Length: 411
Image 1 (cartoon, rainbow, N blue to C red):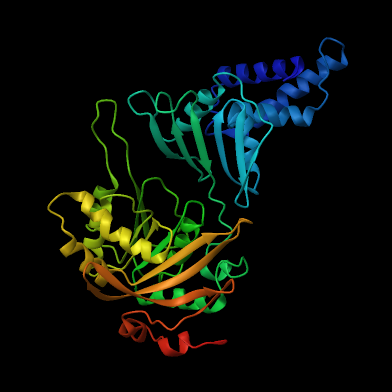
Image 2 (cartoon, rainbow, N blue to C red):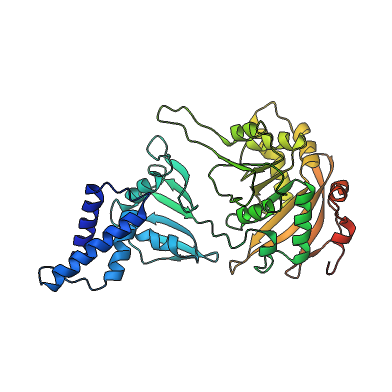
């Protein structure tokens, strides 16, 4: 900032303190104070008692970001083309646009990273310190904040802000984006309506949360939906009967932690018609399988390199729950509980597409689960394969003609 900008910045902060304005919860009031200070400064500059501002509009933006936003990072949060922001150090600020990363020209002052993180965490009730060197939190705009501090990192605080840039909220809206074909979109929508259990798989940043959110958008409005996540990311605000749960960190005394496993267990006591687990990473996979095995339809996502690897992973993760959990229980349970796996990939250009839709038929043997391709990618296009999903009676119960739905060509 120039000297004149520093003066405006200081005067705005003094007004914020003297008038008791909360910049985190009342940015509109801060905006009004900035206009007041800018008007006063312009009068002084006209009288020759203050340095004129070269760019009052730019100054207003900088001061508003510094007082009520995340400083130099705020412009990236406001940029709809930016999908993710990460900071490796004061001079290493990166952003991703359309799946491609780029190093920005932004340079943060010493200690500014820590200040911005603590300001962001004030709204969340979460903390990061030497006893808790990792933190996941949701910002007010729905972005997901992840922070790791030294000495877990080598030198600087590592900060990731993943924006939920939802370009689609329904399966139909994914079709113009090239993520789905009309044929596969109709099939997935019918499968959710019919109550099949669907797993979304893919690598990081392939669009799993967006697809999961779109699948959830097909859930009938008369059903009660309970979602469980590490940090709130799903957005089912259109659904009239939806309760969202998220995990909680332990307090300073090390008590009060609520892990994802506990959320899944508690969700079953809330009369759900449909269960959504944002992402399965560890032993909570066992609790999810138990819920699905009880006849509760569900959706979840998992990191994997293919649909079949996702099935294998779901056979492995429950074993983390304890030595008494044996593959002889897990494998057949996965075979009978998981119905469809939808696998996403991201191309070199940043395009997110469904690569395959695989059906799990319910049969297993020698530790392996039988699967069949319902849709597969041929010459870069998602096309109908020869597999069929399980539970045809569920489709029929909702009035869906499955053979006609899967037939090639237009509906």
